[in-house]
Image 1: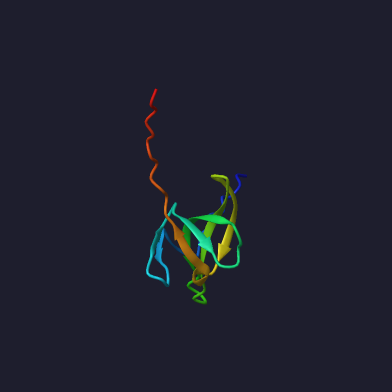
Image 2: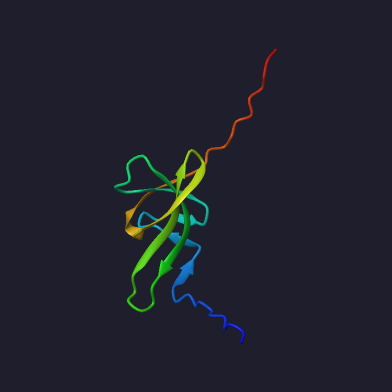
Length: 95
């Protein structure tokens, strides 16, 4: 007898972008700061909504020296700031 495959159906609604309370748009892969998490930077993954009870949260990766760490979840109202990537300046060497 062959085993039956169980198919996991995700009941949550996921969006790859959101708009913060301060009006900034956050997309997947953007760096953000969270209120109450001192000195930590996070990489936004998605906005998740449970359609059964209407609860929303964001999933993100905690960053350690530009290396992706554990997945963390927070309520969207805790997003404090959007950290923009700075442009790299090409320095000329004078010899």
